[in-house]
Length: 479
Image (cartoon, rainbow, N blue to C red; front, side):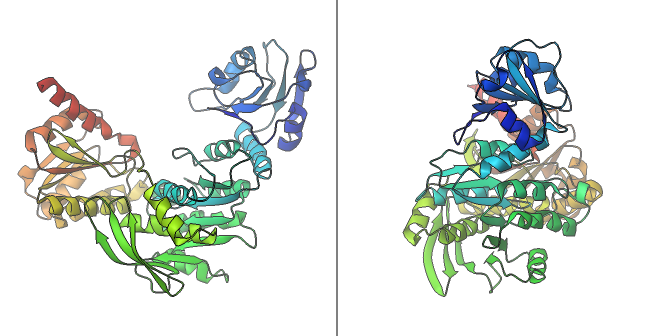
């Protein structure tokens, strides 16, 4: 990735001061060149760029310093002094390249006059970020994290993409361990922070939902005294946390009557959700969001709350919500061989699986169709994995899914639980090798027919979209 600095340019000695690095000069007048941008890929370096040499699991960026300098790098941010590299450039040597990028991003954030909004949570971070961005764009020039650029490297890179014209910045924060969100929030220093929910993702690394809650609540560490915190008021763990804080946050809710922004009278339509919102002792009727799934009500409520805090009118918020664009591989619906496919391949957790199953049953009921599900493994559940896949199989049976396709190493667990709880064995197909999407696609096309509705959902590592692609390929060969 390569990003141009729009807020200001740097000199190498300034970068050394900000990051606490040691400056080395190579060639004539190396430090007289402006550093005009940043890149983490040597192939994307151009004249004036600072190349960041990052040590990855499979690749060491230091090996590509000569390529970066050859492409015109004005500066190299690295963890050891470059060798066998010719050219006019500077090197800033630091203990940890990613941490140094974070220090520079924290400085860069201070150059912007925009309002900063940060979003975290176990489920719905990216969708909530997109809802908030859509709403705020109705009034303000808005910059947002691209994709799910939400980790210790991605968040700083998102900050470097800010322009002088941006009035609001919306950032996403993910994590896999304690301390990571604290690190990112201290870089971003948000004016408004949102925690969507507490789920069971990352149990493998954090052990309990209480620890996951602690990790998400770290977002408070970057808040100033006048900053605002928005929480899901229907999550007991979050409610208990803020009750111990003293300062009451803003609550979004469906069930909790103390919610500041509360959705009632929720109606699921074929291609949207409509609900009434209670806020500040006033009812806002017929709030329409252009997505399906009751869980998206929470995501949109967060956007309404942020929009209200930043001075948008009811009309502007409604207009902004209508500009929301679905995230790729998240509850997108299309036809494959006459089968209505609900593509929700982006990721999966026990919570998002339940929400997706609700959508499946709702869509199938409206079409008077058979509900079917391709379920892949939910990853990062650690010692809880077998238990939660067993519970998933039970839920699938209770939802009365009529055809079940289990895909991945936990496929037998899901299938066995579903059969024990009422799904007939002949209606369950299993492929334990997630590297064989073709066989899974064949089973689906041999079992389902035009008019059926198929949910496809699994954790990102399973890449269940390969099954959909294999289904398409098989159909194309028949034409």
